[in-house]
Length: 97
Image (tube, rainbow, N blue to C red; front, side):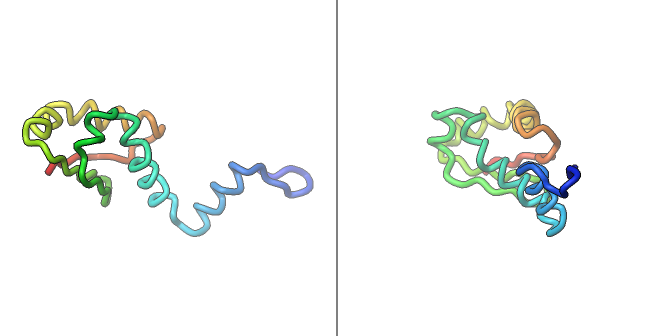
């Protein structure tokens, strides 16, 4: 944590700030939204019209019914990929619309 002169490195300071203001959860959820496009790729990202996360549930709206059906089959793999990329379990369920 702190060194002898009470100095923190940047990562420690940010983590302390997030814990102090109790916004760690919201920060982690925003990371999911940020990395979603990287995980799913350009083609799926292009057909995604809306993405939201609330209480561990990721809501994804796609504009193609066939793609939505395919994504439903790959739901667990997508959930695992997102959580693995973040380094902890944030997404507990995915709902496609």
